[in-house]
Every structure is written in structure tokens, then in C-alpha cells.
Length: 265
Image (cartoon, rainbow, N blue to C red; front, side, top):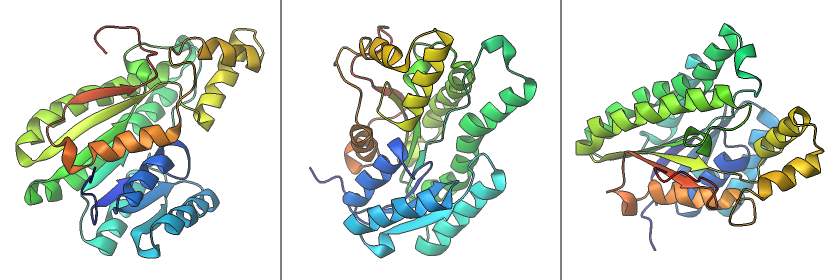
């Protein structure tokens, strides 16, 4: 299937590793040009080298930045437009806020969680949408979590902030659907990333289990019997970014191996 991504310009957040890197890889493999963004320059440059090996040097722009910062979001957008003239696709993907007990979070922690998981996407969208509307084409995709459908132990900051982004995305999708722009969210379940290992370690400690016991407990909750591969999420995101997904919008699309039990998912 030709996804018709050749020459399309994408900004992919949190893309030095994990799901963000997988999304950038899938888009670049299909002929897209990608701006990859992460906070750590050494990890980002290593990711850029891997992408350039399977695409081309001029298909990858690496920008070190913290997407919780309005100034860095503006800079990422500006450098992308300076390089390629426009943005066709944005993948809002960021690391999760820290875990902990709901009643222990401070005001500053709540604000930081919203800056990271909600405001960052809202600000990036505000920059890219005018051009998309002018061209009557665009793709806005956010990587959230299956926890917005089924909350999980000690992940309150992430669940609340990402649920806010899900609501915002639903409203935004209605506003821009007539302009050839789709807005969708991807909800990963237990996908084999550094974030998953961090959550497993935290939950093991909270539940007085070994890491191995907690990992087995989590795996038992996945009907597919395995953790997801980031590449599977990357391919889903590339499809949603493609011409083939033009009639899919305002959706929360789970990729969780059957982990969500609720009928509304």
C-alpha cells in the first residue's frame, strides 16, 4: 500500500527513542521528511544517524529542545519551516509525567504535567494549523496512553493531563475536519519502551514485588500475551498520517493487545 507520504514534512516529538523514534522511522521509510526532537543531544544525534542510514541526509532534521518550553516549540517549528517551507504532519509525543500517589502531588507537579502533556501539543498545533488550513491538508496525531480509558495505579498526573488533551483533540477535530485536516490520538498499551520499564519498576516497589514479578503481572493483563513493539505503533502513526486515513478523525485508537477491557474503547 502506497501511503503517499513521499515529500510530506513531519515534526515528531520525543523521537530519539521509543514510540517517537518508531514513528519518525516509519514516516521516513515511506518517503517523508522528518524533524526529530528530544532534550538530549547525544541520543538525538544517534537517532538521526540511524534514520539517515535508511532515508537520506536531507530527509532528517534534528533539533534539540524541550517541548514543555514554549520557546523551544517555536524554535522547532521555525527551523522546520526554514528547512522545508511547511509542516504537513505533527506527531505530539512526549515523555510521561512522574508517577506517584494522587494526593501527594503538589501544585507545581500538576502544572508541570499539564505543560508537558497538554500545553505542549496545544501550542505546537496552534503553530502548524494555519498553514495546514491554507493548504487544505494536514495530519495532527498525539501519542497518549490506554490509561485515559482505564486509569492505572499511580499514574494520575499522566492520566489527567492526557485526558485533557484527548478532549481538546475531539473539539479540534470538529473545527478543522472541513479543511482536509484529521486529528487523532493513539493510545499505546504495554509497549516495550524505557517508559514501560520505569513504570514497572515503580509499581513493583509500590506493590512490594520484584521487578520480575511485576513484569509478569503486567504481561498477564495483555490478552495478546506479549508487550507491543514500538515499530507497530510507528506504523499505525504513519498510516494515520497518510492519504489513506483521510476519513478517520476525532478518534482515540488503542494499540494495546486487547488490554483495555471497557466496551467504550
